[in-house]
Length: 262
Image 1 (cartoon, rainbow, N blue to C red):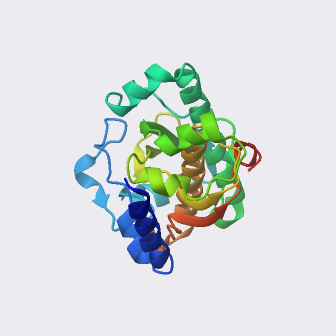
Image 2 (image 1 turned 120 degrees about the horizontal axis):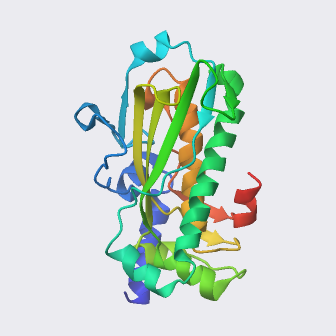
């Protein structure tokens, strides 16, 4: 893309920064196909762009009857990852790809744990370390799709700690990274599934980044956001009350260190 076209695209984005609904709709990822990790595909409700999630279903009667007092965060599954295409090509060029996926799963579990821990008082539950505690809601999640963006790979491999104006915005128009997560909540270790959430998110963008980037940093930022929104969903009367936030930041200092210490 010629430099003049890059500038025009950036100018258009800047003009939209003040219009949250337009940005949210325009920059949102398309949902990936649902996997067998979540049941009741036919019951899932397709949410509009104001909601953080693409799909949602819950059996509120069973949830209320269960008298939930605890939450357990299960290890995040990677066995449902939809491979092929972009991922296969990327994995050939990054020798640590499989190890990095395991790191993403571990990070995701920690993000969910901390998100629910921060909402204990609001939800009226206690986060526990075993699914066998009575009256426990077990939250199980799976990363079902992952495609890194060229900008994150470039930033990690070439740019390092330098200031990179508009890097993500320019390259995301060519190859935007995405991550998709499916979550289900069941009563106890082997009890019935009573809620399902599914979401696909594009890599977040910032006009200027001072972050010390690795190629998984954008995915981790999204995993943290999804975890926080999942925990927050337990504090609202309806899913439409959840705030998606802006898909773009003017200035970002996010780094892996920040994510580890969140």
